[in-house]
Length: 126
Image (tube, rainbow, N blue to C red):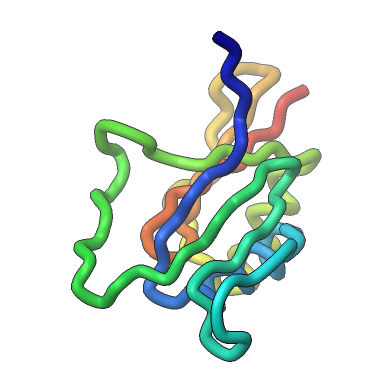
């Protein structure tokens, strides 16, 4: 049996705002919408080669756990210049969870929170 990656599925309280965040802040590309044009039930994006489905969550759906936690915990994105990326995101008002941490001489990381409590890790590898 062979398994290949297909997509990541997120649920959001505001699917349009969440998709806009990934497009404007992280350079994702919107690839499609399902449902009403003004209030879609799902927006599909491509983020760094990864298909992401963002689906409108019912208002009574409970929020996810706050990282760190067991299970799918965060989305990791590599950047060529972590200082520039952190500075850019902070200037836009996105909540940084940590500053830049140098784990090894060839790896620096930083975390911030995206929409709906999605934790996003930035990595600079050299």
